Amino acid sequence: MITTYALSLPTVDCTEQQRIALIDLVSDWLVEFYPLESRGPGTTVRIREASDDPVFRLTITESAPGSSHVETLTISVVLIGEVLTFDVRIASTPTASRVIPFTSPFLPLRVAQLVKKALALVPSEDANRYISDSPSLVSDELGGQEIAAFVLAPSRRLPVLVEVLDFERRTPPLIAMGAGPLIGLVHVVQLTTAEALHGFLMLTGYTLVGPGTVLVNWAGNTEPEIVRRRELPTASENRERSRLVQIIIDAAARSIAAPRVPAPPRREDDLFEISIRDVSGTNDVQSEEHAVHIEQLQASIDELEAALADADRRVAEQRAQLEKKGGQLDELILRNVSLEMQAGNTANTRAVASMTEALRLAQEHCPFLIFHERAIESGEGLEGPEPVSVLQDLVRLNEVARAWMSGEITGTSIKLACRQMGLDFAPDISATARQKYEEDYLIDWRGKIVRAEAHLRRGRKAHLVRIHLYFDNETQQVVVAYVGRHLRDKGSSS
Image (tube, rainbow, N blue to C red):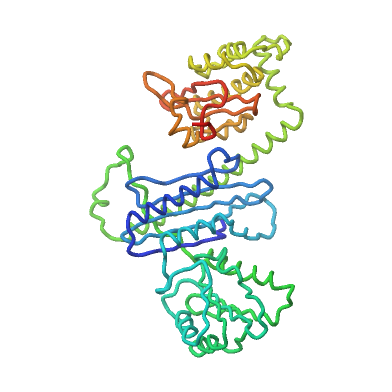
């Protein structure tokens, strides 16, 4: 994996209330930009969160069509002691086999907006100076000296981008948008007068720095990056601005370490017998080794999730291509169903005239599916869409159920197996549907009330149909709980 963006903002003297506020901010951001209903193939979301866990972590994996890389966005909120860390990083996992140049993707605006809101919610400091999303304007000699002292501060972690405005020619600033995508990664300062420039140079000792000069002063006071605008053609300024932004983002991605976080809290059913060495071993070496091991495991999980997202996206693309070829795959599946039902006769599969007939055939020829009485009742009351389409989806689902019951696939692979069978499968319902309309999704199964959230989607408008399912992990059975129109969710009127 190639890290393309990294930001880590530790803030001291923080409380649990501030941690919860940051978690709520990230959760609202997730709902706004990645709502459950719009997550298509190639997008997965994982969340680590528990009441007794000091670590909140959101991981979003996206495989875009036509892209040679899978992007993994990880947002962490960690409170250890009184230090609250807000960490954001993006990594790219290559999926192509060709040798081609790699260009880091530009930071999405939605991520920059999240960082800006996080800084406003929990202000963070660097060398006793607040990290801001806008440039600091300095117009006097004393202010220039203060900026020089900050640039030379040994405890500074972030670079300082100092732009000397061309107050002689009165040209607009090069970094006119302030921090922008650099928010949280850099301090931006603009020296607006000759007096401010004089005070800055007096302490830094820089030479050949005049109006129109831009300096990127790295942490640790290494050799700065210097751009002199008067030496640049006007047509090159936009490209130079983009280059400065990218070298700062790339430098941060290659130098900011991910926060060391503890393992998730153990549950009662996860506890193992602790050896005497584990109880008495109080040295910090073991803790460090465990932290490193956890990071390695997390990296492996991210890589596997990226591969799964890419495979899911590819399967969906292939399914779309097959559908464009006139439904040839559907016809082959229907022919196979017809052969099995008619014992070799060449009856016309279009003869399935009603939903009642489709459900009867499905019950007879799908031995790995359990049909709940509510599914039969709701399905028989459904007028349209095409009953053959419903029958076809149930036959495909029967193959997935067979693979699950036989152990060929696990519960985590059901979504991908459905995609491979040409099914439009969704494992969950929206939070609104779960909270406000939960009764629509409940069934009585084996003496207890369970929620059938997983569902198959087919058609739109007058041709829309939903098949809700319940996967019993104890018996490895797949229960068809409902066949009918769209149940109530966030789009329904109160």
